[in-house]
Length: 427
Image (cartoon, rainbow, N blue to C red; front, side, top):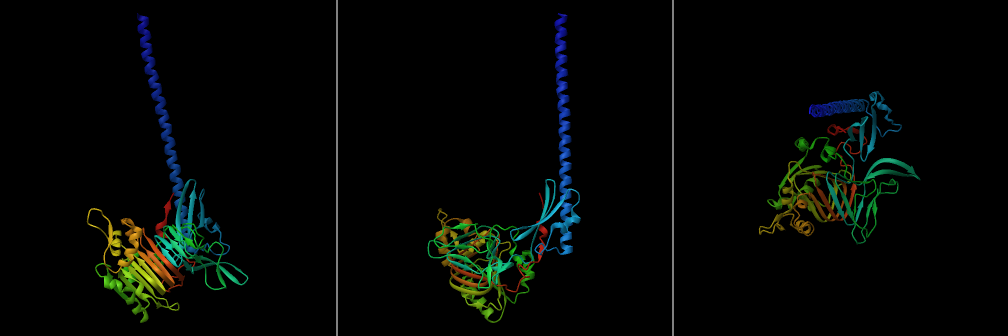
């Protein structure tokens, strides 16, 4: 009996010792895991701190020395003074911009550098664009790539977009071309998109002259070197200031918007500011290549149809302007019969609204994302710029734009590069 009691006691004691032992192992293991985790946190923090310190140093050095990565013989060795132990600094081309990166282990800190005034192009938008029909674009001329047989070959830029780009030449005899005019200047290989007739729609698959989903596009600031939120300071410098209101509530002013702009341009005015919706058709024939005007249109949709020519640049932007206001400006409204079908109201944009109705139908999101719609034959020399977040413009018909500098911006694409202050990020 005593032997059984002793064995039972031994079993209990052994069980307790086993539990204590297992608990001890667990505690020790947990301690090691915590220590390892803490060590990883410390190592990660050190790497991130080194990467950020390297970037801060490189950014300061970049601005102090006026570093130009496009200059002949440029080398990243210019940042050697910032490469503390375990840190590597690099400045590489990324699309139309440049990326300054400081890396330490698995950590990296990056900043965007872009051309002062942004990348010049015939059409520039912070959103996307759909191009339907036959088009012949004269792109903006960028850096000289080579000279061969007395012909200069350049990097060309026809379209720059923050979103998707779709080009559909249709099933007719139309084609899409992007090439510099004249025989002595051409776009370099890889910078001249050509889409032959009877081609299927193409999205985001072009040569280097058409750039889609570009990061950090700020069209307004690129043009004026001023944040869009400070638009009032820019407006003060404009000679003519017009207000049209909504295409529904002030249809006559919107209908005559283009004609009124043309009157001022014909009178020698070069900078016209418009608040509200604008039908451009009446502006046809205005401007000149020698002295191109600049038209800015704030918080409104822009439409045009028919035959249209214009020599000058147009910048369209919105600030604190909801998508519903854009849809309303086209005259789109839901039928009050329980079906929620969209119909078009009478107004300045009613013709364009009817054309869009067959395509957009009852999709409210599309109506509210369309700042610019042109349908017809459009030939211009200048640049069209759209700064409307999450938008997609539509160009339909025979579109023949050609880039010329409007003289109103701080030399777009001049090659002068600057750090984008809000682009510093850790990875």
